[in-house]
Length: 493
Image (tube, rainbow, N blue to C red; front, top):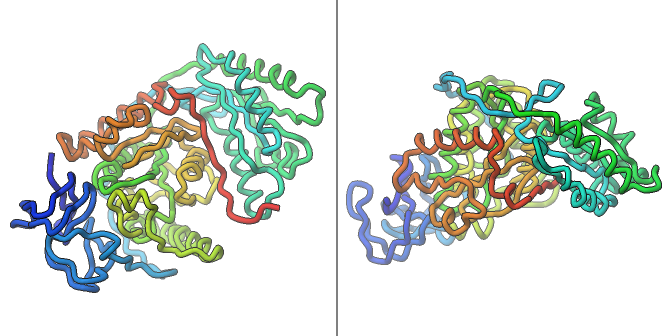
């Protein structure tokens, strides 16, 4: 295993791949670097003297300014490094040509729905319109497990606290997300469970749902029937009979939509897991498939990389609006735009938002940006898309699924057990985590600093994703987890 990594030739810091003791001498930057203090694994150390106010460079880009003079071999972190980012910015379009080339086709075994859409799971979903019926939905989920079997792979109730007493944009978000959930092709049958007096009641939702398969989607308003549980179970039985008739068939990988998200990062996330996912994205896009990148606040500081990969100036303008729109959201709520990463990120070696963002955007690979999506908007353009959603793990992963992702790739340096409405592949940035939390982690990208190349791991990940799309369960599915979270922006009455 390597002792450290210098990511880019122009970097003036390197990242320790193991704990480095004070006084230890490392062969770096064309000579010896003696550690002036202990350097934790995943953290940065200076490869040369850096003057106060001088740029600190990682990934070939500035990640901040030195708060004070930093000596060669000194630990570089929040105590001596500050962000260089400002407020709202203006941008110029400086397009970078894409080197992405078409590659040979690949296939998986999925479910073809009557509307032509493709699913990678055949599940029964119970979707409450309002939090008031959550307990009924969970009781139905428990009893309806008897329908699992044959081609029906799971029954899940997606409870939430919304659908009533929401203002403006929040109510719109809820209605759009509920409609997205109802249409998602990973569900072979959907029971929409309403109360009757809520703001987002079933008649109101119909305008958002639009056309639908009346055999696949059924509705029950609890206030309209005497025995809501018995009636719901009768409907679920009919949905199970309908969904059970679907069988897996061979489908081209160009129809796959994969969401990409990171959370609980460490100093290796931007070196191993995120670049591997980026290389995976390039592979899928080269086969005509689709990937979606989100968590806009973790693009701040690296946004120009994405902007200049936009296929045209219209997309560039939409990406500028995506970035500045989210900054305005922060400002409306009196929040600092360039707040440092979370305590877990800092503990893992991430010092500034630029540091986090430059690692985060590695997940986008090198493909051109083909689409920019608003929150809850369905993906329509194949290739790499950018989606408006916050950095919160559950909210962002749900947003990816609701925009059409069949599977979410979630990279982590710290580990997390959560799921989303679709299979959520946990990809560790380091082998220690993969071994320690084997019941959470599905794929170990930490091998990239041990004995595997990024290209090898990306190809392996691509094959693994095809297996998941064909029915292989991920760890959170084996545990029976189905989570989701709707984005809340404003006032609740």
